[in-house]
Image 1 (cartoon, rainbow, N blue to C red):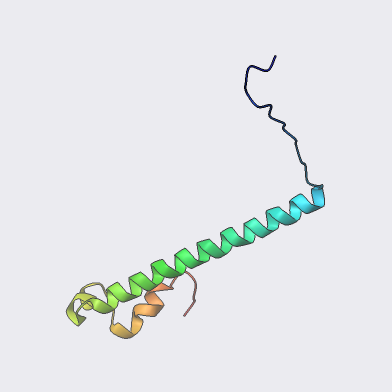
Image 2: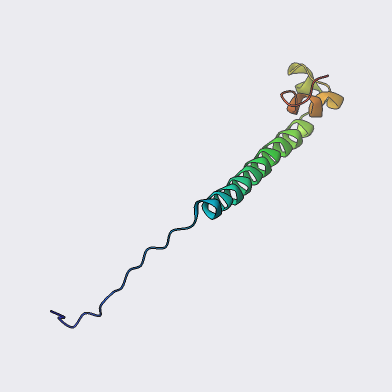
Length: 79
């Protein structure tokens, strides 16, 4: 009984498991790259903020200007 509505046809396409796994890996890497980019931006912003502080303000935080990068990356680098 078609009441003036066009008929819709649906088809289901399934990917082979190997292709599906490859697609998943691509999107996983894209996500990892995006997360790394956001982390980099956050660290850059922190470095810029700390560099904008006066030497007296840095001293109150227990930092000197030459320690800023080391401080920002303290969880990634071991000194």
